[in-house]
Image (cartoon, rainbow, N blue to C red; front, side, top):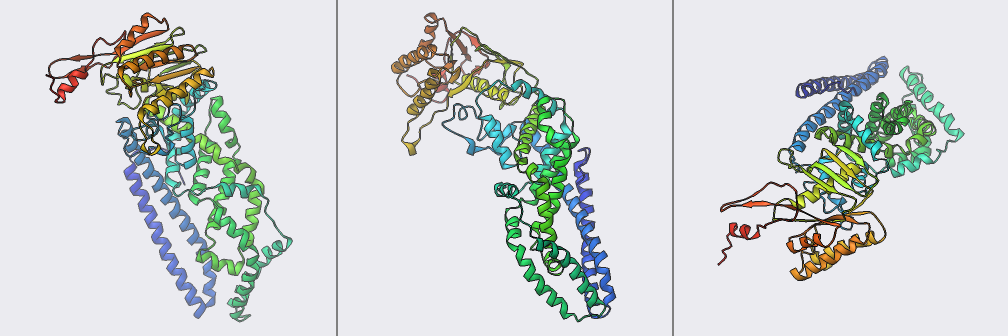
Length: 584
């Protein structure tokens, strides 16, 4: 398939390509009918006409190939067109149609449930450009990975470079979307690659006898040297000899990857072979494709795949019974496995890594991420002009934040709907982004060697007889256990201990703050209990931050800006009034 060099006027290009495919389809149908007529007339009146069947069949196969190429181009171009539509929807944060990755939600995970990483209107929907099940799972795995600054600097440089290769990323994604449809599990196929194929000396003899014998019988019948019944006898002999290969070829047919998967791998390999990269991280992943051996292996695999998966096709069956084609096919399989089996047995995991990189680079390009990242050795977190990735950039309000070396806890107070939870999630999601090797939704962001833990979205579970308060305590216990093991925990706790009465909540919150302060843990605790803000006077490691609101007779206004100190006023009374509750 020829990949177009530009993506302009896609509607016109698709229309033109469809017309070409239609013409080749008509030519193919006309030639098929002509060959059928030639066969009938040749057998009944003039057997010399049968000599036209061979060149006619070659032309027929060429027409099929051209038709398939144009069909493939149409599929590819339509995906490009759809990708343009999806790009606009992502920019508008209209994410309903995108895969939510709901099955990756894990309620026991340290932070995944609370930060909208998966599910409706999630980071996964915004960032995912993978096309295969395994690529999708790898992206989810990386999103859920704990923070590790070890190689993130190299990854940021790599993704920055890859995000400038717009054509490569666009074509890579569109190819996979166009041809990977009904995926088949390939583990049995990879296991088959590891076992050498058995080839008996008798097969070599039959490999030669089959085509020569079939051709000789047909020529002899054609010129009247032998009776036509000899063709039937030859076919019966063929059925006996072909039974020797039935089991191994049937096994290969069952475990063989879908043609769409093989085509995708071949086209991806060709794309990668043509690219050059400067980043050492990308060069490491690119090295297996540089010599062209993988592309050669995929081309051979694609040709073999067509034969393997069409062995039960009527045309193949007829030619197989006459020329014993299974023996050349088995020979081709054996040679292909010996030459390329070792190289291709682990190729899917390598291509999954490229799906991941293309996803991250495409996301970075679409969002125009330019924020600066600094992985610090000290246990600090700092961000300037930080926003939430899932909010439309047109309405997102940026905030500055700093958790310095000496501060253990930020106590966050504020009116209802003023932005406390959104800010905390924005901080957590951006930590996930920089851990992926992406730049943050911020002008600058610094992070020390933390492990991220959250307790924000705690709900009851009737099936497990778990109340929301107990669920929150279980999350807090997880944070305490990690902290007491000596981990550098960064925690985000929203509306702490909200499931109990005010007295117990204040006492429990203060006890938890002291207990965490005795470890290496640091983080943010939001609360509506303004009494807790007085702890700043007792503990030097605690600081107050807040979000405010302005209230008049008819409405409540928010600026969503983080401020120093505790919140001076709350709005629950006014909100209840606006909702119709009358206070006497």
